[in-house]
Length: 126
Image 1: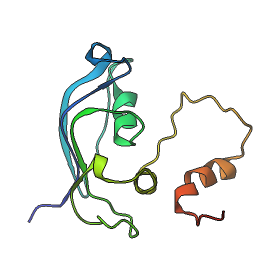
Image 2: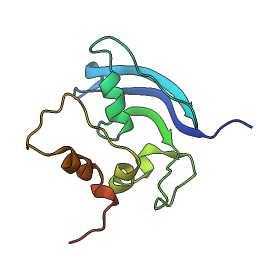
Image 3: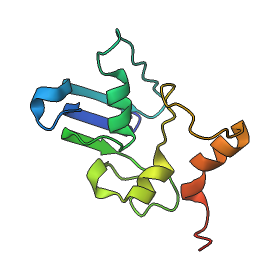
């Protein structure tokens, strides 16, 4: 029996323009199974960070992107669902992205930066 699919991308297109003329990703497709690792390599400007931003839910895309949520609080846990079918909070519990290109706006400690990534898992507190 094969391992379950965690992420499946089919014909992903994404970029930074208002239309497809700004696309950096052109028809990207891959499947990542449980226990596998994915290595994203390529020259500058080829779309590595763009792909990570799509996977993290930061950048809109065209195509099909399905994920299998692992968070125990996600009602879709264990099912392969379309990335657009989960809420922003659910997505934040599943994925995060800390880009090396993000300039620090505040002088946070490492602990404070990690705690920012934990925000979606904390209670409302409001």
